[in-house]
Length: 504
Image (cartoon, rainbow, N blue to C red):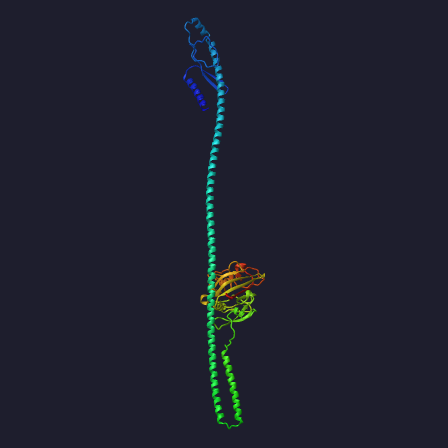
């Protein structure tokens, strides 16, 4: 199609150039919107052919050659007929021009149809090419995305597998560590229990040896006194017998006196023998108990107030003994039930203790220290809320240091129903009151939370906070608190802290 257009334009340009370059006669034909210009042949010296015929083909521009032998008459006749021939020639040219015009129109229509179909084909080809390119780009992008997704999936799978393996290994290590810690703890507890039992037996043996030594010395001194008395009586009897022998002539009065003296001597001998028997029996002393567990072992089964004597001291202390909870034998350290006693007190009050054992009270940090440092004790904390719900926290080992270490707390081995985690502060926490701040917070927890306690950093418990009445429903952060059972405000109806020997 492009070549055909080029040839057409080249032909038209050639015709135009020949028309401009020639000085021949021109003839213009207007056909519709198209105008055609033709160069007419020069026919002044041309003669028509004998067999001239009008055709639809293009005619030669030159006149026909004169045949030799033609007469002058014929030439003159031809010259006469020249105008008619030119007219015929013109008509022939017009007919040919019309044919050419039709041909050119057909050519133009053909060119337009071919150009239109070509343009449509080009557009379709362009659209198809662009669509194919876009599809190819989309396919490439999808392939790259799928590849990246596959790689990310592989990496994620590897990470998940590695994480799972690490978690499994960590869990195995944790289980092994827990078993090892439990085993070590059991061994340590067993060693401590055996050591404490051995120490207790040694101390008991030494105490018995000392006591029986003192009793033996007392009996020996009494025996010596009785022997001296017998010797004196024997001398008196000898003197009396000598006097009786020398005074055989004495009256019956003397005989009576001798008989009386003999009876007296007999009575003295009987008493001496009784004293000897008494000296062989151990001297009985009044019973003393070092804690409520020993009171229970002595046969007492009723809860109440009893007197105990702290180990290696002569100090007698009145305590309340719980003989019912979990087998009994508990020495009560703290008890609250109605808010009748103010627990927001200073250091000296918590040191010496306050309240009455039969009611609300704090036994005293000095007494608690002396009691729990003499042997291994377990701690039981009994709690009850306003709705009547009860729970407890139990610690296998419990003791506190002396005043020189601010009565630092030591606990281990938590169990119980008052929360899955211990609400009591960690080992090493020091005791604080409103006038002696030993916690690890700059806010002075004893003043903020009220009462005296092992606050650490205002931790999750305070059984010595303010006892609010049942009518109070407002959450107060300075009340009794055991966080891992009832949150920040317990609204407690009763709390009790009590200890018992671990080997009970």
